Amino acid sequence: MTVYSQFRQQLWRYRFEQSMSRRGYCWDAPMDRLFRSLKTEWVPNTGC
Image (tube, rainbow, N blue to C red; front, top):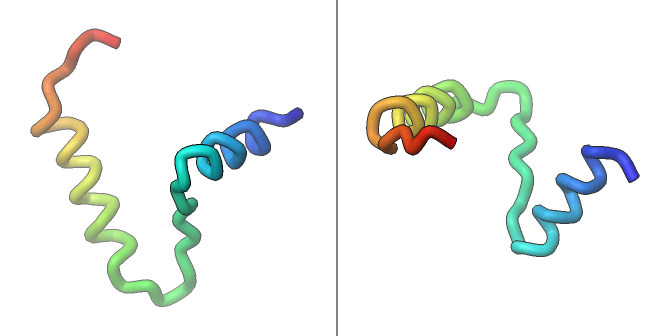
């Protein structure tokens, strides 16, 4: 079993849907910036 198939299996188990950006999808870059900011500035670093 590949790492990708294990990842897809975990997504399915927890009922997550993998994001698949399409060409011309205007919210892709702003959402990437939001989540990058969220991870680096708003979530405390726990050392994990």
